[in-house]
Image 1 (cartoon, helix red, strand yellow):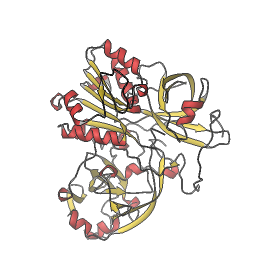
Image 2: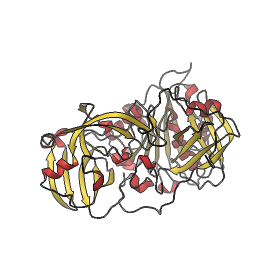
Image 3: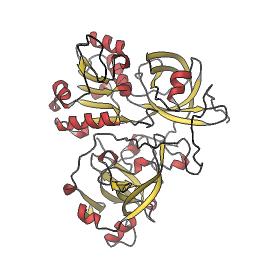
Image 4: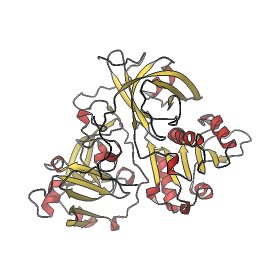
Amino acid sequence: MDGITISRGFRSRRQEQTPKNRLPPGQYVTTDFPVLSAGPTPQIKLEDWTFALQLGGSLLGKWNWAEFEALPQTTIKTDIHCVTKWSKLDTTWQGVTFDDLLQAVGLTEPPAPYIMAHCDGGYSTNVPVADLIGSQGMIATRYEGLPIPPAHGGPARLLVPHLYFWKSAKWIRRLRFMEKDQRGFWESFGYHNYGDPWKEQRYDGD
Amino acid sequence: MTVTETAAQPVRRLKWQPAQVREIVVETYRVKSLLLHVANWQGHLSGQHVDIRLTAEDGYQAQRSYSIASPPEGESLTLTVERVDNGEVSPYLVDDLRAGDQFELRGPIGGYFVWTAAMGGPLYLIAGGSGIVPLMAMLRHRDRRNGRAPALLLYSSRSLEDVIYREELDMMARGDPDLRVIHTLSRKQPEGWIGRRGRIDKALLAETCFPPEQNPKIFVCGSTPFVEDVSRFLVELGHDPLTIKTERFGPSGGQAS
């Protein structure tokens, strides 16, 4: 506790105890599902929705909604952690894993070490490919068995639950492979480039 | 939304630093402003927030984010906090904290939901409840400049007693022909209230807003349903979604609890 300022009279008001191995440092558990977005929620019609996989400027694969829904589906139950301090336990998501996307375009190996996720509304975020393979990342289209509500990123959002939740970009439309890492939207505004909640990598330099 | 993919600023860690409460201002029956002394505050922009960390005697810690209410020119870093019933941190900050008490803080954080006088206007601010706080930092910043950009604040509160910064906003607007402040009271209006009633709807936005052709800088802040509604109406009224910057205070999101 060296050098730490004690706040007089402050004490925990938590009713239930969350196991330490479920809650990263500085987080608290919520049962709500708060929304944080930099702009208006895009209203996307499913008939206009497409999803593309790109390498630099070239197209590796592109799906419309029906084609995307026909890809192999995976369901995962996971905890999610927002950089604004809330965590939500045991959330269930369904979608197409990054591994299955690669397979769908006939790739056995990822063609580059980084991706930039591009979204409706101009949002973007960067993630190392090593954090997506091995069923770690998916394009999710269902939350708790239902279509993802637009405010929570529907029709489809990236899901990389072991990183802070801004990396799980809402309204995703494109994954672009990159040879060199580049910063996405929040990463360009002082947020951490990688965002490991267990290392409390909230902001640059953490 | 401007998307930047180039490497940003050089990395400097945001360090936790002690903040001492210099003065507490009662804003409403559930909202207080904390005027802080932070020894080496590096400065901030209007619209940014800070993280605060409270440590109990037994070592228990809690962190939350709060918007900065003071402008960059302010002499005291000021946070305005609303008591969220059943919250863990805000009831302590609003009910228990006294002048002289300390907690830790780091920041400033956020570079998108920000307005500087250099960005120009017109400035179009739409607040719901305590969503006024970061927008007030923008108005206070604007108020301290010469050649003020035209500005409009549309501010929805539950009742007159819930209006934060009421006198200061009145004074600002009285002395400034380029600033309009429009209050609407959504749940309860005092007798003789001649102002607006009800929630901010599309008609009120259509009637009051700067037209899209004037390229207003739009900032919307409030609860999630408030921001969802207002930003959708603005898009329907022809504003480019990329010109609308939003900040949502979730029911138990970092900003509000």
